Image (tube, rainbow, N blue to C red; front, side):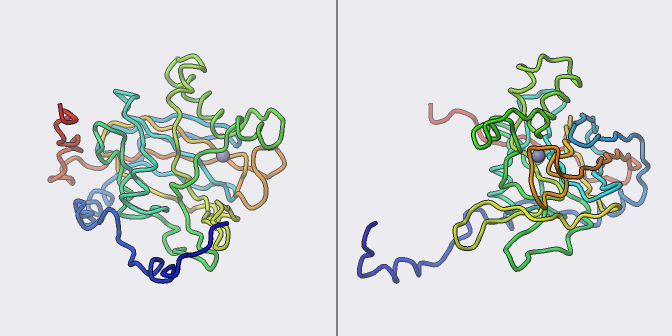
Length: 281
Ligand SMILES: [Zn+2]
């Protein structure tokens, strides 16, 4: 262990600087969305069985909700441009531009080179939770997704119903891909309803029982044509274990809503990044 320099206290006292100021992002158009939401009608729904996943399509300009039904349950969400699977949800950049956990008004950003909002969160019935005494919040973009490789590394056993495998099977079925082709498209998730943080002493990723209850939902506006995949995590409410069948698990419901078109007068779609793409050459 290295000894601290004489000016250690002074070095530690440097002021934190927010890396990416979110007041430089386009403002959240709450009033516009409120008008559109007041007119929307449900046009489709998909039930995601426990310890499994399903895909769903959301046209640009529609809304979708992920709803807790039957019991407290978390979900792992992947999003793609439904016309180009190479454009997908970028968890790390969303973490930098928004926060470690997301809620109403935050955007889910997509991968390079488009780097544009794929979806905007327009309602979150768990937004009352905020930050608890353990430093935890809800809907994180810091964890990845439970997967059979990490489970095998730590437990020495195969488990096939981790969110990574559930999402892989669902995408393979939804887009008629082989499992190997589908797996390449699975990416870091939005942990819907999951309550997580970093321990205050060792800064390790932790989870705790989700505050979600049947009837709670998180709602998104589709900024582009979306293909979604949602896994009902084998961890259930993530209050005990994951990557096994010992925890009670419940389905999740995905609902697709269509607003009246003329209630979104100023919404012209989500523009791709204006960067030239030359990378200096
Ligand atoms: Zn999971």
